Image (cartoon, rainbow, N blue to C red):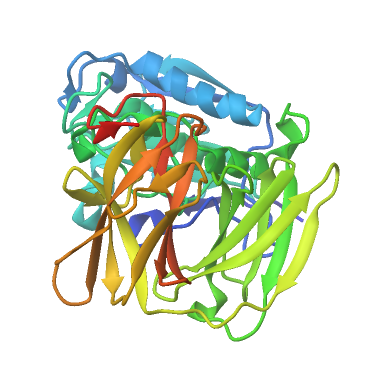
Length: 430
Ligand SMILES: [Zn+2]
């Protein structure tokens, strides 16, 4: 069959409210994932980024930032991304094929600026991928929004170049969005200073990002024991047309390891995960039909797992939307540190008789008596609580679970990111 080049614009990324977890882009015919065939990718860095753009703020070191972002994905996937400088300014226009050069640019040319009009005004960046009929990516162009301030030194109110490029390179490699709040592929991008803290946590890949890229490129992964698969199907009467986010948490540590959304009648495949013991959870994709504990599953050496579950009826009495800190609520995880205590918030909708919170890590406790229900009006739930983050908690993303009495109602997936970078707004030391 003759291969016809096709173009994909990530339409889903245009919808602010929509999010795909590390779900891969697939060809419509056989579900072939869209990916690069080669282990080596060259990214041309436009002179518009190296020279000072009007969007640039503070001390500007673009090549170092882009290099670190590329290295993060290289070490996770085994793909080598090399950079070269280029005089090119504009993204290849929408069409069946581009110019064959994968470009990252911030130039204020008409072709680039048109991407940030209307509802896309607030987006920090845009990635356009060109691929052939076999689903092989032949070009990927990234435009940084020249209307927004961007910086490499963490200056308040600007987008962080490295975090933004980490996210866009995920798209360049073929990844979609993640529903894990602490993942770099989370659709919502934080500006520097969110929660009034120096916020560079998105520069580093989360376990979910790593699982996503390994799911796409298992052939390049150098790590032993990488890349097991857990496949399953939820049966019974499923809300939201069977569209769920399913995620795996490390059984001992409670950290989020991988997440995936599949709309195919409750079917899911978690790929690219290390061997280990996991607890699986599901949450309705719309966030309005509750969460469910799918149970414990182990992957052993060289073995993939498949199972079928018939969950109890989902309980839709309340749903989570946001995490919060320092008086701000956002769909981005809150960075905290081991051995310290922080006051956190969660926000959502619905009504609960006996709200109770738990954290997925056995080493992060909700301080007894600290839960406060804040009055944000009818059908709104805003809870404040004190989280005691134990000394021995590993870095990673942890889930906040909401209960009504003993009944699990919803989960905010990966909403607490344990980081080594210091969050100065500590409630008290442990
Ligand atoms: Zn995106």
